[in-house]
Amino acid sequence: MDDKEFQGRIAIVTGGGRGFGKAFGHALAARGATVVLTDIDAQAGQDAAAEISAAGGSASAITCDVADEKQVAAMVDKVVGKHGGIDILINNAGLHSHAYNRPMADIGVAGLRRLFDVNVMGVVICSLAARQAMRGRPGAAIVSISSSASYLSGNAYGVSKLAVRGLTMTLAREFASDGIRANAISPGLILTDTIRAELSPETVKNIVGQQLLSREGSEQDIVDTMLYLVSARSGFMTGETLRVSGGYALSMG
Image (cartoon, rainbow, N blue to C red; front, side, top):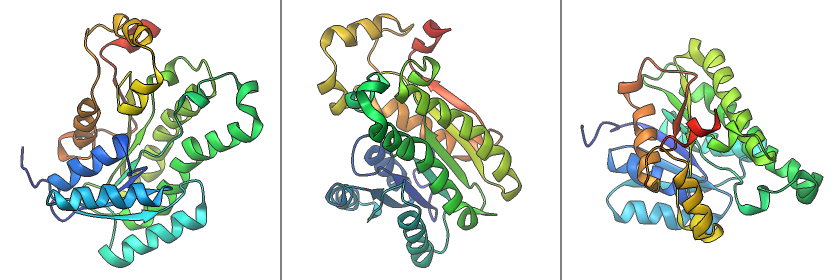
């Protein structure tokens, strides 16, 4: 693989201050991309960008709530004004903590509205805002993060991620004429620090036991899939959601 395969390309990663988003930023920058991390947490975004820069990459941070059209529009204008366009958009920002894996009555209407504003409308708002700046740029690609929970749809979080899968197909259809591909990743149990802190060892053991591959999923598994989907190697793919779950998805039918 060319270590600088994304040289000269401009990448926006939403929710880039921590977790998958920060890992995505590191991986893209290490391969030559100029990375813009957006996060509602200003300090987290700045810290992540500084960490990437210290490692030799090109990164900056912009504070932005993906559910706010005006903030997203301003963020895109700032990126385009500074860099001239956008080549890669990673729709990673999302609400996924234990607080949203509960019955709808427990979450409440206000919480549900915020969940869908971020997880669903955030994908729509960011993709539409970036479209013009991505139009006609060689290799332009959008990757959104769904979840294996979308195949269960057992709670509101799963439904929000089911919507991401559907939106991915719609974006692929509508953006194809602009030369923009749109795909998604559906991770299984990936034990980031946040997820590990929320799940008991027994729960982790139970989920791993339902996988075909009997190991814990890692952040790198998702990073590698993202790199594939924004590269020329997936140039004939659009509208697809790749399940990265160690075979857990097969237990759900």
